[in-house]
Amino acid sequence: MRKIAIVTQKGGAGKSTLAVCLAVAAREAGENVCLVDLDPMGSLSNWGDRRKSQDILVMAAAQGELNTVMGELETLGVTLVVMDTPAGDTMVAEEAMDVADLCLLPARPNIFDVAASGGTLQKLKARERDYAFVLNQCPPQRQSPRIQQGIDALAAMGVLMTPLVAARADYQEAARRALGVTEFASSGAAAAEMRELWRSTRARLDGVELEQIDAA
Image (tube, rainbow, N blue to C red; front, side):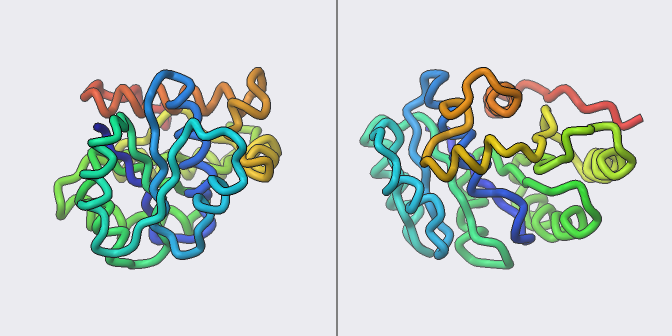
């Protein structure tokens, strides 16, 4: 069973949307997926309650419960766990880091998100956890100076996942309908991004070195 934690101390980076869309893309690729909601705001739990399909298990967990939850999911035959964590410096986020095989750090292409990623990165390095950054909510015009600055900063800090994820209306509309973006608009650009992100994530989980985005 593979375990992914979506972690960052900065709020508003799109952790919950990324978690559900990545989970759906993984399920479509053949994984038996569980979403674990560690955020008291309950965004994943709300998404699961509204979702008509029962193809993805959604569970809420609190501080101190993760090890028990992971044991239960093993017995259910779950092959992939995606954990959504709260913003801020929280113990439950650190517990998710401890059990995860891979931590994904979403960051918007601005100096505040990049700076906030530094604290999370220090915790991951202290734990010797595998991690990768996801540059999220990028303007569709990818070659703007602001995007390039975000790429340069994150590439300098560590691994940057491909592809860059654009700010597209399909993500919000899919979440509103309790869908993943690959279900809502399967032939759209956002769906293509999320399928590629799952392929990159799976490669990272399998120990394959990620192709770096050119920061030159």
